[in-house]
Image (cartoon, rainbow, N blue to C red; front, top):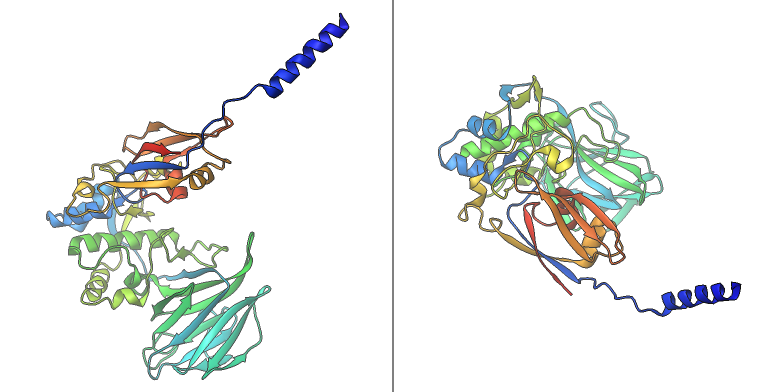
Length: 415
């Protein structure tokens, strides 16, 4: 009897080993179609443009997209620390302004004056900054001859024409990651900060007056748009910046990033745009101090390019409720004349990108579980080839896969 049971167990075991299991096919790509560009929360920039063309004022535009808010003057004279270079290994700084002077100081010197600079250079030279261990290593190159200076944890850079140094109005060119940007105002700080993954890297920040020097460089919408749309954008940008001012972020040595994780800060290049740069600068100046508030405080006035026809709640997008966000109709985003690229869009997302979005080794199927009232995907679920399932928000999926918006449908899979 015992032998029979052993034989039975052995037979079942061998059957399990040799019985073929039908393989689950893993798609190579996933095809999606959608509408809109951005997270959908707050002011639709395309919607604001459409409303301005229809004769609506900036106040009407802002009151439409943000719930229970006031537009009122607040003190915006703060100095804002803007990150203009994140996790860098090196950067190069120079000026092409004839007669311009650049100074390099040891340390983060704030508003101190009457300090002796470590080095001074003009148009014939460039300042090179690299990371060495936990320090910043500076050197200056003049006519192919390079002089290195003692390393330090941080440095400050000033140039002529700013509030710190009288003289010719110099413009700095800051080069890193194969791109050059121009800066005209404030001062620049560079600091070595330790990243949990990459180790020590350079953080480059520009300290500028929020009211004008910062806002003049915001590049969120084209400067040829209707004035009331530009005014709405300038007030929203000021409100967003004020909501971040005074909150120091150690990871970037800043209060705000100069990129879309906060808002795009282009620097002096925005102000000197051909034909239209002065229009943006004038609009910002004329709206000085105007802020979107709720309960007397500036709101983090989120904005985005265009929606799929309705705006979104912060709660749906990010899981954190903001009383001033609401779902409203946004027909301007669906105007093919105004928004030809994103009224509809199609994307093919590769298997590895989709799997990475769900933190799975592979994804066999995708399923939209529900949609929000706005029309965005509320939750989307992936199932791996082994049957493991993982669910994330539609906005999280958008962010991780870099698709234009969370207003999308699943079209097909390609094997």
